[in-house]
Image (cartoon, rainbow, N blue to C red; front, side, top):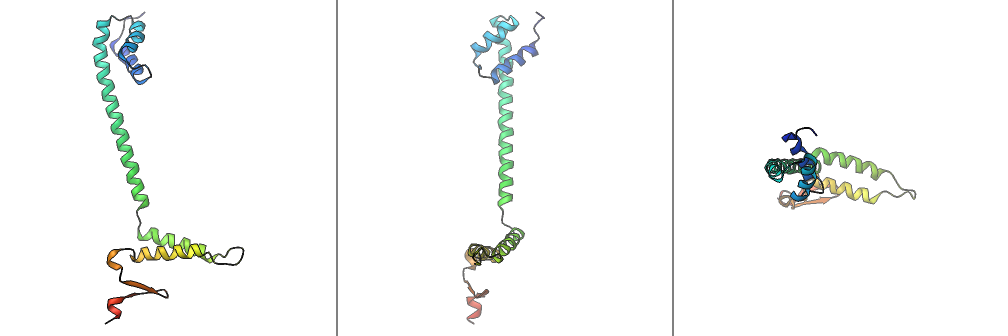
Length: 147
């Protein structure tokens, strides 16, 4: 057998640490026997390998946390309601409402959805705009009309 290279031994230990057999005794039995290492030599190399393993795990956890944060940001952006997204949704719903079903009835769910989208666009669901009322499609401010 070739003279053991410290980096090769560390690589074998890291492979074992990432596998199912990651206890020191199990790794010593497998890697120590493969490279014919004394327990003292193995312990010296084990410390280096174990430190590297902890660093690798820490970096992987950070990478996963960064990916999770990026995914969450994309979800927030995707679910962010903008005027453009509301207008697009409103146009889609209006088109659905125009198409009657087999019995010739208008899609009432689409009409209701269109009204909800319009209410969002006008900010009717915001607390400061609760004074507005809807009357035959026109929006009135109660305070201004009462003057």
